[in-house]
Image (cartoon, rainbow, N blue to C red):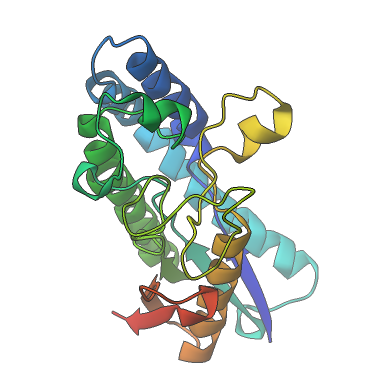
Length: 232
């Protein structure tokens, strides 16, 4: 039995542009970005999720061309974990310099709340709908980094004097002022600890059996192996 995993849709909704635009709004002190960015997401919504459905169909066609029947592999569509916390769960004050220069989370409180509780949920709900329509398994990750996000009060940023730890460090890459390509590409994406955690989530999805749909969360105070999975 093979496992096919698909993570798709965020870039079609302009995730990188959202990060850039919201950060620029914060650094220029010109007000929250979420009204205009929500409008942009809404404008791209139909095409983005039609693209997800098309991608599923194309993967299945490729598998069929390789001689696999659908009973010979499991197909999992997974959602995205939020890389940023809610405003109430952020360890730096909204307009303090540390939020931008130390924490690497230069966003207004309103934008953090929008990203964490609106945008990520909107994307997850859309992906769950497509998974149901296309008859594939679904792995819910919207809360996988809860408390481990960039600038979260429940975690700390690893430094040269405070080494990284899977049990206590942030699990997402902070927004760096360094403009090197690698920093840009990895900004607000899962880091090594998060990748280990997401791998554990896939293992739990596999162990749950064919046709599973479930959500994966971390356990406070534990490392990536402490992920838990609940079917729904």
